[in-house]
Structure formats: structure tokens, C-alpha cells
Length: 442
Image (tube, rainbow, N blue to C red; front, side):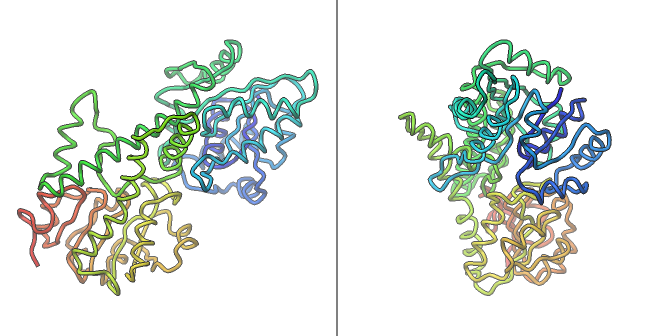
């Protein structure tokens, strides 16, 4: 099939590359000329494992191309995906201006029947909004249908998520359109859910909001564990073995970030309010998450007797491992709080430092994790990159000035750190925190 993907950002580029890999002719468009030029030079605009190889292979096979000519791509395609950014507006609602621009461009260039697919994460009712804009712009007698086909990509595993999804959700206005999308996805033999357009739109938001709620719930339990002298790792293990609950997203930490969970929970709460429903659970989810970073910084301040003029090492800046994405990164938020309270911060991240330099030039960026720890009063682990799990504690002990390790992702065994005479501070690990049983004392 001939496919156009409007928006060559994270979702758009992954979507375009995967459909090209499945044998379709794909044109990715974007109004950012610099981004398109970079892609045409064979360079990626963000890091995602396996994406560069897939893009280059399909460009070479002439199944994938990049252009700023959105109108031309629309005219030459039978299925058009809208995969533009939908950032939060100042009031927390979703900014649909890029979706509106894409729909306007499609309407003005409609030269025959097309299927327009909303791939971007959008509030319920956006399908009707897109159809109205296209109908105002399209030539008389030329028709189109609008479909919702939400993505469920996780950064760091996006290629696998796209090729082997848990489910494919198709929100279509009629059976004929649904069958066309099923044909497009026929090479991916996964469970397919056919719904109305509005149900599909809610599925994406509800899925992300539920996972975010699960994270905030376990972080709330972790806060209780710290006060009660229990270990959240033991509690989560006992909970996760219940098949009704499951172990995923029961990892306590400093909070969730990224391009999806924060904005999607906020947007769903705002949309619910617009329909006259107060989504109180989501309000609590958001409040718990917002409280995690400052509570973590206060824990550091209390343990060190203040952090003004103290030198702190930070491991991890991206919002999760496997990506260089800093959008709503809790790690960056904490680094910013540390700087605002007078700390000297030495930082290392395997992928995200170049992007972070533009956000936080005050950080002292280091070449590796041992350089980041050199001469520090404490080390803070904020993103759970695998290489941080394999750190050499003997070498770490030699380069650090202090002995405090603040494990913001609970990736270490406290007993091992205590064996190396470190003072361990985790999240929700009241029974093994500094000062608890078996902890190293200064």
C-alpha cells in the first residue's frame, strides 16, 4: 500500500519504518526542514535501538522516503497517518494545533477517497474534529474516513512493540474501513480489537493512566514502608504473584516521567472534567507523582545535613533506560532541584548528556560513572541503566569522598553496599535504610 505519515518524530518515524519494513511504500513528512534534511542524510534525530538500521535499509530499498511536501505525500497515498506532536497546553489539556494543521493540509490536498488514521495520542472526540476540518477543506464530491489507531510504543523497545504488539486497536466508523486497516496489519498476527472511533481514543489514555496509577500506588505503599520499617521490594513481590495484580509496574522509585504518562494522565483528567466527571483517582495519581522528586531531594538533604556546596554524583538523566529522551524526566527534575539548593552536581548518562547540556548547562558532565562519582559526598542513581547495575563497588568506594548512595530506582542489594561500607538509602526500604538493621554506620 501507499502510505503517508505526517510527522517524523518518535511515533511517526517508528510507524513509517515499520510499515516500510512490512513491504509498503511509505512517505514520512514533517514541516521541520532541518529534521527532514537530517533523515535524508541517513542520521537519526533521536536514539531508539534498532531504528537506524531499519530506516537505512528501507531507504536503500526505496520503500521509505522523507519530505517536507505533505500535500504531495497526501495526494500519492491511500492511507494517511497523523503522527504529529500533541503536547500539553498550559492548562493541562492536549494541544491539538499540530493535528489541526495536518487535517487542514489533508483536506486541501484530497484528490480521491482516503483513509485518515489518527496515530497521535489525542482526547476523545478528536476523530470528529479531524473529520470536520477535512470536510471544510476537501473538494466537493471527494470523501474520506477517519480512524483511530493508537500506538502503544515504549521508548527503548519501540521496534519490538510495533512488530509484536500486545494488541492492535482499530477504531473505525464502519466495517469496510476496519477491514482495510486489518489488511494493512495482516503481516502482524496479533490480537486485533475493533471498536468505535471514540472507544479507541479512550483506550490509549485509559491504558497509560492505569499504568501511571499503578506506579503512584506502589510509590505510596513505599512511603508507608519507609515509615513502618518494611521493605517495598518484599511487599511488591508478594503483591505481584497475585495473577489479578501482576508484577509489572510495581517497582517503587522517584516517579514516572516521559512523553506519555504525565501528559496523558493530566489530559484524561481534563477531558473527564469537560464531560462533567471528576476523575479523583487520577488527581491522586498526579499528586503522588509530583511529590516524589522533592521528597527524594529532602531525603538527601536530611542524610547529609544539607546539600549547599556539597558535591553530588548523579547517574542517569533520561526519563528511562534505553533512550535519550528527557521529556518530563524525573532525573532532570531532581538534578534541577539539587542545583537550586546550592549543590555541585557531577552527572553521567550513556545517551542523554548532549541533549541535557542545553537544558542544564550548570551540571558538570562526566565521561563515565566513576568520573561522576569522583570526589562526591554522595551518589544518586536516578535512571536504571543496566551498566549502573554492574558498577564496581570497590572502585566506587575509592573514588568517592563520602559513603552515601541514594538508590532512586532500587536497583541495588543493600546488603552488598553495606559490605563495602556504604550507607544505603533506597525507596520504601525502611528495614534496610541507613540506620536500620545491618546498615553501615559512620
